[in-house]
Length: 451
Image (cartoon, rainbow, N blue to C red):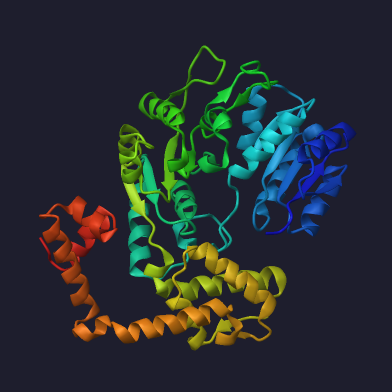
């Protein structure tokens, strides 16, 4: 993981001093530019920025130029705006223009640290297996029937205002689907605000969600709108919803029921008009049984569920995703690799991919450094892939499903029928046994004419 690099665009020496104190002893590189023009040149020159802190003292046009350039970067870079006005409206205006956060001056170290934490948890990173352009479904790279079905179901729900729960292992692309649903929905002109519930400490999560008034607590030096207000007329994406505390779950449930938020320290509620998309890699029914997740909140979130299949269930997607990574690497860094040898592809398709698409991206990033030819060969891959393949072949020799003499379709149909028998015809229970969504199971039942 590379050292975080923060760029400060400001002529105010006091802002630089506070930012340096906030970063403390962390291994973070701080770059500075004293004018907007110098800041834009820095953005053009550096492709590895983690965060931009921009003073809007040169006016809204200059601020907008920085926000547009940061949004066009690959990947996009979050921007924290340092403003002159201590008001919720000024913060809302800045965030709706694309800022990750807005801080009125004079700054404090606590203000900066809280904002940096929020900006890092509010994801702005475009997952690399997207092409340039709007984040619609057509830019999600896939050829497998499983992903085509998920994309079809997601496109259907995108046209509604229903709350969506996206499940799937880490690295499968849950945020990609959330952004695509937003982009193709009637709310596409509104903001898409993302919050990683696991990336915010428990003490800060509620204030991040619901906002607070100046003086609501000791460090509340200014009024700050919460993510619900920032997502007005748009979509709020709550990632890792299973990590939310029971206290925050109760307050989230109330907002979903009456569409009003109660900022900390405010005696009045604020009506919000947003759509909520939640995502988790946790088994929420198990969390409910363990008393760690509210059943009533689960029902509120699970209006429409999408399960993103892990990469190991769709090996045919590995090649097109890998080639899209290579295309982007050639475009951005002049990568020499153009394709992959069939033998090397087989090794990748046999891998278990516990990190899913994110892991595949990391492998490709490593290959762009170590592979010296235009074609990825088996020997180009990390040793673990070759070791795992050998073990897999030995295991396959002991027990082979091919020995049953059934076609893939016949095997799949028998699995569906067995699950339905064990579930006494209960589709929900059968889908749980098969680890697939009800919609996917119903689709496959129709495919094989199973009643």
